[in-house]
Amino acid sequence: MQPFPPRPILTELRERIVPSAKHLPLEELLLALDLHLEQKTARTMIEYVLLAGENDSDENAAQLGKLLATRARKLMVNLIPYNPTAAAFPGGFSAPTHERVERFQQILAHFGLMTRVRREMGQDIAGACGQQRGDGPRPQRS
Figure 1 (tube, rainbow, N blue to C red):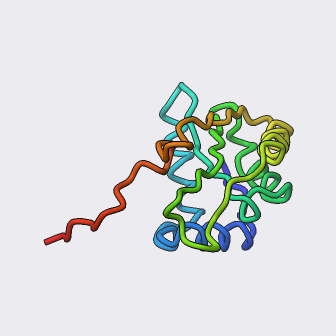
Figure 2 (cartoon, rainbow, N blue to C red; figure 1 turned 90 degrees about the vertical axis):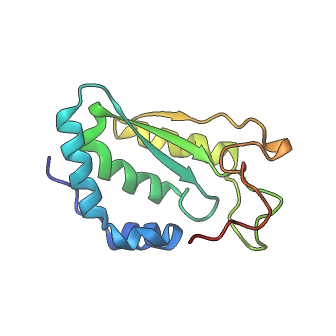
């Protein structure tokens, strides 16, 4: 498969949200995905964390849809609404609205992508996806 040339805005967004992404360019990641898809018969799941006002716009959904459309028959996109924690830093990320998640899902479906939305459970006790971590000091590596 020929990867859709990623728009600079998509690459910049990915590197801002996931700083370690600078070490694995999107083009390389897509080539690795294509190699994986060539070898597998079952669908492969792609997980996408939705951050309110960061990567959950209609434009973001359309960019993701275009990027993955040629691979749609072999992919499923698992949309994960962000789970804020009490320990989150001020001005940090927040969760998108249910309506925004549904709209994002509809746009991806327009590109032929199978999607599912991870159910939010355990947020009230800080036990939801992404919240289960210790608040104490981290052990030092030797």
